[in-house]
Length: 381
Ligand code: MN
Image (cartoon, rainbow, N blue to C red; front, side, top):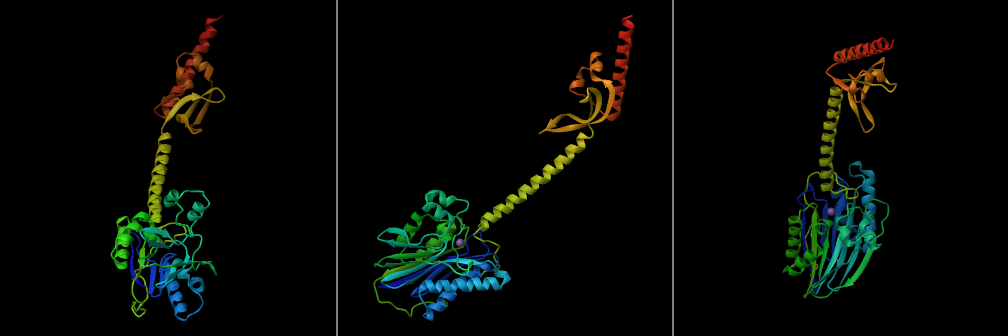
């Protein structure tokens, strides 16, 4: 048997750069998904795959050891170059011959095997939600829409060393192996992936159709699909592209680390930030306008001490805040003013148009109280 490869990568519909990289250097194949903002993501995924390819050619160690060397290379570059500090990459790589596939994996890129119409995931995501699904905290359906579904628990290049998952499977004629970035699996359901992978007439068509499907579904992330098919025939190791590691030629990418949010999430955040800031301005302007308006309002009411008083503001409170304050407290007892029968509204506050109207009203109350007092004195000889 021999292996036929098909590969497609696309920037997607949202991102400004393609941080995915792939490697087609039979029998070595890989997909990497970089992260780390600006140039970081592209550098990390490309550097990791270049390192693996280099060490593989040099026959240095096993594939998982080559991944650990790649980890070290990304880590060192990140530590020495401020522009790419903190970068990292996920990756799934495989040495695939006609007889078997030896897989290594770190992060949330994935490998799937389609055999006789059934598809199964060969890799386990190193994400927080995958761990939560395994421990039964959340269901697989909940994981798909979980706000932290992009948080990775294992990454190549962010620590001095990394633990690498490994698996070897035997291959049968007609098997189709898919290595892909989360820009595919985050957009297209496994059922759809299985259907496309099965229906395509060859590996390249499958890869192209998978990327198209992810773009049709929104394409919020970079998409890479690498399809390998075990077909009858002799292996021909000479038949492969010259430049093995390829990424999209892309300008500077926006800051996007998958450890906190996708670029889309970030854009949403920025959008909501603008809305929130606008709302805050409206509230603030409203608040000051209201304050200014309050200052033009006056009423005559009763002080805590039971005297007639002139208030600035309105006789009300909001959330425990009084919307008025006493400007002048008179020595006139409110009880006496009420007793005149002319000023029943005192307890609730008698609204007036201005400070001088308030003064006039107080003068009137004083007069009324004086007359009532004299009247009662005169009326009871
Ligand atoms: Mn991705």
